[in-house]
Image (tube, rainbow, N blue to C red; front, side, top):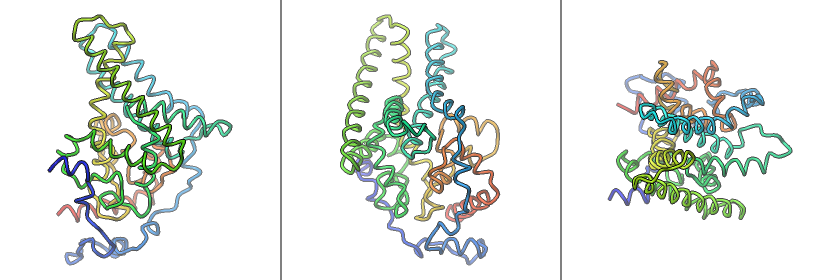
Length: 337
């Protein structure tokens, strides 16, 4: 039963339509503005207009930093793993999480074309970097691209039939146990519905590359546990590779289930800001940056897809945007009772 759900999550997805959201105003919890929002046929009329040019801007220094930081974290991991100090290994594990999450964040932003790459090499640079970052966290970026574009179509909401990334309606146990199955579904959708032959070929090459990397990681781990001395590079490769396989297994939970677990068929119910983006506190913010990376402001990402992840926190401080996000809290609070 659980495997059946993992193979076909939308089998239990609700067919939601406007006017069938089940909200009630008898207790006068909602004011007139919220009632109008929930009854609206077009969410966009309640989405604040912003200066997209302003919020998409990134300095060359910032662009360079976001592109190299997965590598800096990986270098730090390697230095720690090869230092011989076992008490530092938890720090190496955190560096691995940082490498994985930032590789995903970069691949995701490149899929959306959010980074201001040099115009002369923008297309080839984007395609190459998508492949590089995808391999760093074990993903075929060009197969993910088509499924993700479909996920962002206005007609789709996570939890509604038609969304290839729709898993938020599944029990958490299914998502945790069958992470690789859910990932394989994304790749299969991307291969079948690729917009171009180039995407299909690149995605296939990336998928073969990921499988080869996994095989090499397993080989290195077998050598290590048989007492073979590993060189510095292979030791780093084996440590991060093993960690990345664990994180990849849990990736659907982090990237799709968590940001969309409350879904009601509207823009405000399509995505939610995950902890750290919603809750105050220094530690909550630090931990969430490590664990959920670019998904922290997921509601804003769905609403303003062209804004790079690193600029979403600044966008969230906008007065009008902050008031609009408050509607999400009211909406979620009402449906949680």
